[in-house]
Length: 166
Image 1 (cartoon, rainbow, N blue to C red):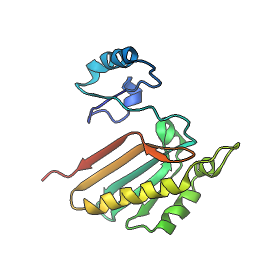
Image 2: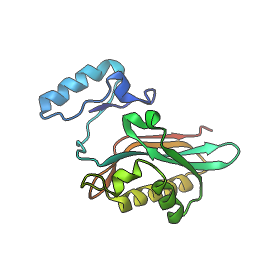
Image 3: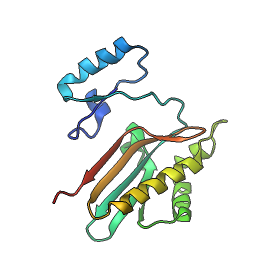
């Protein structure tokens, strides 16, 4: 369960995320605790067993145009400072090269017997780039954090999309 509020960027910092809820009663209780934070909550399936968490973002730079941010994500994104920025458009080879330069990517490639689905990560990033290109006239910002990398897939757990107003 998480709070659905445009004004709260870091939901976990304000008690706006409740994980591993095992019953309908615990979901209802979590939603009730979050009620003072906003008028909507989102109930999602729990995505466990991630090998790594990434951030995938697109931002409009006034000088250079659309730029893609890739890096370590989740609650430690700012602390890790493990990011790379690519100007768009970017090719699959550009994306793969950028990912290999991230420290967090070692977890995806395999660490202590566990590896993640790197191909699924690349496909997810390509989908984000395609979305940004399709909405390039209005898109101001797109942020997926985290993109949870599992052994057999990659799942966007939280996203923010901001469009330019007329």
